[in-house]
Structure formats: C-alpha cells, structure tokens
Image (cartoon, rainbow, N blue to C red):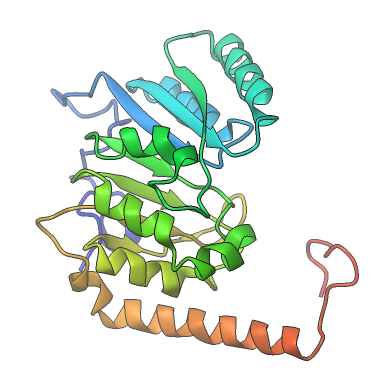
Length: 250
C-alpha cells in the first residue's frame, strides 16, 4: 500500500496525480492561498528559501514560514535570509518570521509556547532538518516528549518532514508516530544528503498501522535497528572518527 495516495508506484509521480499544492499543470485545480511552513530548529532559514523558491518555480501559493530556534543568534540570519530570498526571487509575497523552541523539552514548556499555540491549525507543514540526531540523547531521556505532544496536537492533514544524517533513530520515531496514529514512511533520497529520511502524515481516516504492519516497513525498521545496534557496539569498543570523513573515501 502507498503511504501517500498522491504518488504512484515506487514514489514516482503518476500521470493521474494532481494533488500537489505546487503543481501548476492541473486544469481547474484550486491552489490554497498560502502554506504555513513550521521550521523547527530551522536557522538560518533554508527551509523558508526552499519553500519560497519551489512556490515561485511552480506558481504555487504564498509561503508563510515560521522559523523556531532556541539560540537567539539565529534571528539576524533568518531576517537576512528572508531579505536575500525576496531580492533574488523578485517577489516579497512569501513571509518568514523568527521564534523560539526547544525540541528536547515538552511542547507545554514556556519556550515552546509559540509552536504549541498554532500546533493544531489546519494545513501546516512541519520540517525539522538535521536536528534530531544531534539531540538524540536528550530526546531519548524524555521519551521523545516533544514529538509525542506535537503529533498528538497537530490537526488532521498535518505533514511532517524530518531529514537527518542517519536512519538509525527512525524506528524510535516511527513508534512515536504509530502511537499517535500517523502514517509514515522512510523514503530514500539521492540528492543532497543521500539516505533514508522520515516523513509522516496525520490522517484520521487512514491509521498508521496499515503501513507499519507491511513487510517492507518491518524489514526496513529491522534493518535500521540492526544498524543502530552495530553503531552502539562500535562506540562501546572505543571507536571514534579521528578526522573528518572525505566524501568518496573508504
């Protein structure tokens, strides 16, 4: 079974697909006036730039991005990124603002008040790029409380995209998504940082168990668990990377 019905077999777009909010080739398709993009740990604002550039290229909706960070130093960078994007794209219809959050703390914590306030608004896309792995110990120590709360509070139709440097944590995050009834997948992307990333979709009409119980999902998650166990064994034996890995080296 497909996780998202808007894609054809193997994740490739089929000729009958016409549900993309950025697709300008579907006659009579209603494009929403705006997309709310929530970028968690998103300094300096690359998620906003990606969304705005895609929307301009595909004649899509206005992108209203909210970049949340726990470090105040990112605020000036976010505003500079917004100004640069407006200048290069030749349009200032896309918005971007800055706020505070900490994914290692519960959604109810004061620092996450802005995220919590709008968590259950409809039509939101949540992105958490390359922040999960670097905070793995803190997330595990609190049983992934932030994501448990966010998945539970998010409105039906919310989309979560969580790319990161390794797939070893996806079985744990998949369990959190499953508990919240989200559909999820671990697509393998070959551009940028190649590897398996995590995508989830909140759809009350199609519980996550349908995908979780498929053979392909079970096999992938078992592989990820084995990779994580092997990594932990290496660390216990005292392994550490002596120098920065050179791309393409063995």
